[in-house]
Length: 70
Image (tube, rainbow, N blue to C red; front, top):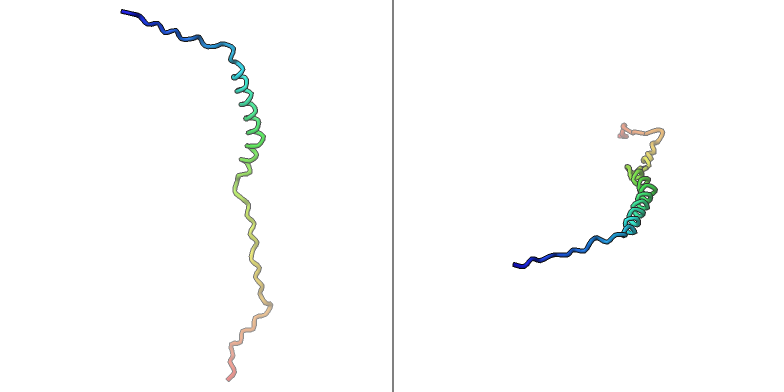
């Protein structure tokens, strides 16, 4: 009976550069969200629609002629 040995390579050390870049990117995106996102979310409330009221002109005197001439 033969025995098979699997030799897996050890994890490479010194890959902290990608971790630092990731942390820096998260900080930048967080700052951008706080600076631009939060004010934009606050302004998403109900829109203010100003509809002018209709203008109705009424005469001062209304002549209702209820008596008819014969």
